[in-house]
Image 1 (cartoon, rainbow, N blue to C red):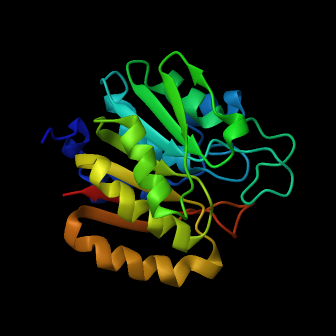
Image 2 (image 1 turned 120 degrees about the vertical axis):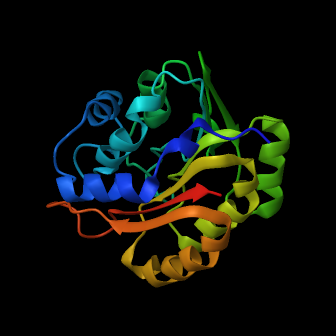
Length: 224
């Protein structure tokens, strides 16, 4: 099986470096995501400070990146971005950051699916293992270097999607779960410990942020 170029990342060392440096200094990726309307880097979250440090030297590689959750803006929908949200913002941001990558996304809201240059999106339900398997059948033989779960912010749904999807990640690739809430913190910590045997590295971190003490947590797995 093809090994991801990201296998060269020493995830623990790199993440500790950016942690010591701090998560409050915006990066180019923060600016890119903000320009497309994503909340990953400026405002309520600052994940892209860490992502930029981890991925910047691989920007011109021919990567395959998948993100779950396009950002529905239907008011009242679970994990909605709100009426002002911009569906697809993160996918477009990733495309701008990784100019040679192919970007894939999926969401339960079929009304916001779209296709553009270097971007394909698909329907799935991350609570439903059968629907997730159907997603991967539709995607085909693509194996991913980066996978990001920014879908439904519930640990049970995150774990369901991970179990059905980790097989699609290349060895050495990076899998991220964003926006872990305090309610799910203990369950997710237990899950991270369970997955250590199939991971090269695991990180579970609450990022310092002056405006967000609620869900500014992420998990990063690097596949063994």
